[in-house]
Every structure is written in structure tokens, then in C-alpha cells.
Amino acid sequence: MARPITAAVAHDETVALRLVGEHIPEDSSVVLTEHFESFDLNADAILRMDVDLLLVACREGSAEALRLVSLWHTVRPNTPVVVLSHGSDQEFVQEAFAAGADDFMVLHPGPYIPEQVSRDVEFTIRKAVTRTRTAADQGPDAGTLIAVLGSKGGVGKTVAATNLGAALASRGRKTVLIDLDLQFGDVALALGLRPDTTLFDLAVSGGSLDADKLEDFMLRHPSGLRVLAAPARPDQAVSVTAQMMSTIYAVLRQEFDFIVVDTPPAFTAEVIATVDVADWICMVAMFDALSLKNTRLGLDTLELMGHPSERVRVVLNRAGTNVGISDAEAVEILGRTPDVLVPSDREIPVSINDGVPIALSGSRSHAAGAIRSLAEMFLSDLKAEPAEPKPSVPRSRASGRRPFRRKASVKTAPELARGR
Ligand SMILES: Nc1ncnc2c1ncn2[C@@H]1O[C@H](COP(=O)(O)OP(=O)(O)OP(=O)(O)O)[C@@H](O)[C@H]1O
Ligand SMILES: [Mg+2]
Image: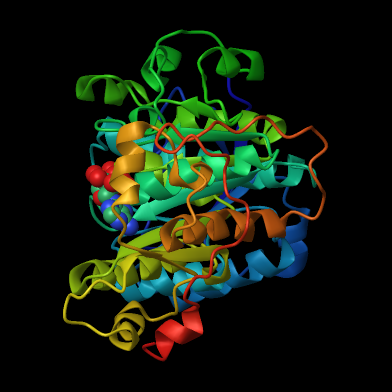
């Protein structure tokens, strides 16, 4: 049974307390313990409340509600606040997050609240509280979660995720790669691994999700990388839920230095739950106007979700391809300079076919160097050196050579901005 969550509700005259109560499933362990019919609370009253969370239920655009959210966030930064409102006006949503709201949900008008709506509200509450508790419970040694996102299919997310995971593992960091492209994931294939066990098998296995159990369902790559593979068939995807993934991440953070997550080209519930707890986002864009524009939208959405922009690394894939836009124009559409530029290179599809990540293949190409430099960026964020001996690195099936370790020269972001 999940640990109970106690919540206080503050609401205005447009929202009946009963309506808020009806948004919480009857069998839920979320308990509404205090309620206030105004937003006029002072810091002292806020500090005295013995609750896990505040729900602010208000009319759309309520300045009083935003003031309360802001005060709550200042006085109790480690106790989440979720806004429930009648509508999701873009500006109000943005203001609520800017004031410090942890999440925002639209109230159902009633009288009958569909079960899916109340389950979503419960999940949002649980997620907000778990995120805060997990952050508080996480020691300085907790693993770093990197979500690899991209605004559309085929931009190179899987290439980036598999290479990043393998490169981190080959540098002695305990790393697990999760394939969250639940319907069409191909991480195992790209790494030359047979997906004997998948996330679906884990989901239907029953029992609690502890570290030993997760280990049993992981595939092992010669670089030392562990892999939780996507289900074998698209219809099995529904068994893997956002809740399950949140639990998996909490367990893996205690065991691994890095958790890298490959994603499908959409903000699915599982992807949103991942972004919510991610330390870093690795956003992959392709060098064409549509992908760049969509990437910018994706970056704006991340900011709206409260993910800090300085915790996003942008990989511009197929950089320098002649598609009628200059490098400087690409930066302008994107709204920021990319952190890593990966050129188009035949070596990449060949490495996927061989099942040997280009980062480990020993190649001296710019593409391989760029991909290795991405891993270096994440490694440089970790202060401590690896405690374990480095695992052996496989020889490339294509070349048979040992991996090349010198940093290849890569066009820098300022050079790109100058269009060189
Ligand atoms: N820089 C590159 N040069 C040449 N080919 C590339 C490059 N990057 C990716 N590719 C190729 O493009 C294809 C798509 O890459 P990948 O599977 O990584 O994209 P994706 O974003 O994961 O796609 P999906 O959304 O369908 O999962 C692959 O065949 C890959 O080999
Ligand atoms: Mg993919």
C-alpha cells in the first residue's frame, strides 16, 4: 500500500470543496486534511500546516491564487503546490509555474467526474509529492538521469542515446539505458543485443520492483552498459505505465551513476513522467527547418514544465548538411546555440547495422568525435573519478581496432553561429 499523502485545499468561491473531493478517487491514499475558503493565508499559517501538499483550486487567471502559490513556494519550497483551475489558458498556466506551482490540472465541471480524470489528479498529486520526497531522500551519490528527446521521428535520438550510454559505461560509469519507445523501440537492435527480457516482462512479473529484480531483467552490453529493452510487440506497451517508470527511476538512481532514457517522438505520459524527474534533457534536433522549429517548441514546453534551460543539452544532428539554410539561420530558428554538432556520416547507419556504437568503434571521424564529446560533457559534471575498474571495451566488428580515445576536432557552437 502506498504511503498516504495529506493535502490542504485552498479554494475560491468558484470551486466547491465537494468538487475538489470528487476529483480524488475514493480508494486513494490521498487525504484532504485541511481546507481554506480564501487565499488570504500568511506565512505563519502556512508554516504551521502539517501536510504533504497544497491544492489551490481557483478561477482561471486568479491573481490571488498566484500570490498564494508564490508565498507557499517561498515559505515551504520543499512542499509541493498543485493548481486546479477551470481552464488552461496558456498565460495563466505559465504564470502559475512561474509563481512556483509544481503542476497544473484542469477541473472537470462535474457533476459526474470520470474515473480517468480522478486517477490523473491522484497521479499528479502523487508525482508532485514523490518528486519532492525523492529529491530530499537522494544523497549526493544519487545517479544522474538523462532523458534523450527529439521533436520528431528519425532525428537521431536512438543513435544519441545508445552511443551516450555505451560511452559512459566504457568510461567506467555504472550506466543503464532504458528504451522508453515502448511501441517501436530498437535500442537492443542498435546495440547488437538479443532482447530476451523486456520492460513488458518486468511489468507483468508481479511483486515489488527492487534493485535485484531490475537487474534480472537487464540485458548486458560488452561495454558494461545495462539495458532495459522496449516490449517486443506494440500491443504490450500499455503494460508499462508512468507510475512504474517513476518507481524504476527511484530504485535505479541508488544503484547507477547514469540512467539514460531513449524516448519515442511524442510527449507520452511516460515521457512526461521521465522529464519531470530528469536531471538533464538531451534534445536531439535535425538540420532542417521543420525539425529546428519543432525543437524550439519542445524547448519552450520543457521550460513550461519547469525544467531549467541550463539543464538541457542540444545535439544538432546532420549538421552542415546542404538543405538551403545557413548555420546562423539554424541557430536563429532554434533560439540557442547547440552544444554538440554531429555531421551526416555513413558510418552511423553502418554502426547501427553492426550493432557497435560509433563512440566505441575506434573511428577518427568527426561524427564519432562529436558523439564522444557529448558523453564527456556529462562526465565532466561528475566530480569524483570512477571507483570501479573500467570494463573492457569491445572491438569494432567493422574495423577490429581498439577504440580511438583522442578527442576529434568538432566544429564549435560559436563557429556554427558565425556560419563557418
Ligand atoms: N548523423 C547521421 N548520419 C547518418 N545517418 C544518421 C545520422 N543520425 C542518424 N542517422 C540514421 O538515421 C536513422 C534514424 O536514426 P535514429 O533511429 O537514431 O532516430 P530516432 O530519432 O531514434 O527515430 P525514431 O523516432 O523513429 O525512434 C537511422 O537509420 C540512423 O542510422
Ligand atoms: Mg528511436
